[in-house]
Amino acid sequence: MSDRKPTIGGNWKMNLHTGDAKALAVGLAEAVKTDAVDVTVFPAFPYLAMVAGVFCDAGSQIKVGAQDFYHQANGAYTGEVSLSMLKDVGVATVLVGHSERRHVIGETDVLINEKVLAALEAGFEVVLAIGEKLEQREAGQTDFINYAQMCYGLAGVSAEQMSKVTIAYEPVWAIGTGKTASPEDAQAAHAAIRGCLSGIYPGTDVYATTRIQYGGSMKPANAGELLAQPDIDGGLIGGASLKVEDFNGIITAAQ
Image (cartoon, rainbow, N blue to C red):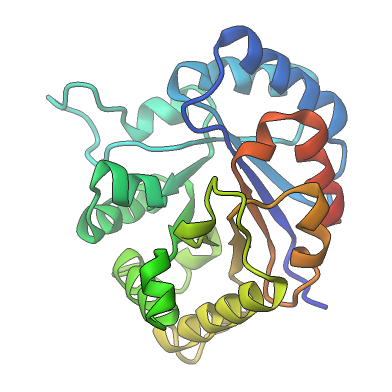
């Protein structure tokens, strides 16, 4: 069994408003008591400070992450949010490279790498998401796509900095579709990703110490089987993170 500490993230995406977001945060603070799992939630921008305040007031160890940010420190970038602003409201972790940012918003590998480097330089923990589309999987390109996205995303990141990086493998065809990779397929992809890390950082233990989450319709019903795989160190959860019982069920499975 790996000695990597499990990590569970809840990506709320563009969901909830003030009352619902606060109620969810309060419910999670009351329900999630374990320190055996690192737990992070990623609310929408308007509710980051409020959710961070709920967790702080409750003495909760749940961290607050941001779904996005701009890589420049400050300046004339209308509509953008800087890392220093995020730090100012209690954010400790940032999500970079989610498939919806790549394929819906149109973020490039170059921009994703700039974000990774900026966040690490600013002292944040980074969750770097990678994953293939259905047509790429059917063409046998899963490992190639994951390797390419990871190499681009981690360009210029030192082995020492990798202690603050988590990789989230999210097959695009399984996000929000109800489809989930079988435990065996998910494990195979995670093992290949870990093997890629050994090539990117030869002669180091980065491949062994880096945590790799699975994202793609993980629910309490399938979490145990997925999380039992030797190279799956947690989950990046979408829809199931919007309900206290479901999200806590996945966290319990991770223990």
